[in-house]
Image (cartoon, rainbow over the protein chains, first blue to last red):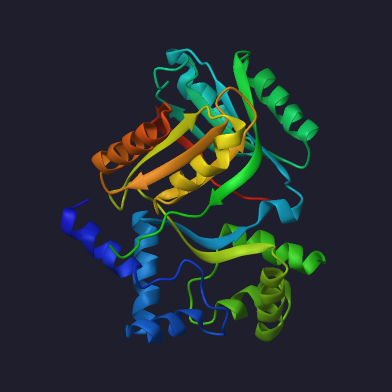
Length: 159
Length: 147
């Protein structure tokens, strides 16, 4: 994408709150706050969704309050030639929210990273077992979360 | 939370209507009027079920760099170090985890240089080593909790 378009998208997004006002016409209200026509805001957001700059406009939940109390980052060692197939299988699990191939960070040999969510520790372990069985990957490490210090979203902020 | 709340939550996690009257559209799908939907969503937010409703951005398209970092810190230092890391506005996730690397966070900024400078500063201040695990390929990013 062109540099200027990016800059333009970023400056537009500065007007769009992270958390929409809960009123009958939220887009109109956002428009009033920044003096942009509400219908123009709707059109622009739709365009940015089509272009992929906005992945979705959606509700984000507090997962702990909807009984997904446990999450774990699981790192897997996968041979290069198996990455594509394995990554796609892991991504197909609904309990997996994130799946990335990553650099090993000069630290270890784990190169595929998944975030899994479950309703208990055992639930998470069971999901890991099923992923391991389905992919045939046996070398992995589980990092359960203990404490949340920060959880926000990527935002465009005023610099 | 009843079945209608669940239906609404599952629906708006997939997508919130981009329309002048989004709550009317949701209402049509669950058989409620606009005001009833709005009141239910307000209540779900007050109860701490909904964190926010808004855009989920694709950082790469906006030209941002990001990296996952992991480090080992002593238990008695973890709060202090986590706070120092959180001071950067581009830190979106920061968790204490069980394991050899017990603090994991992601940081986003306009340039790699800004990230490197910040991480080097934290490393120096606390005499710690932060391991970087930059993304090579994305297979999935979609957080959806069926309720």
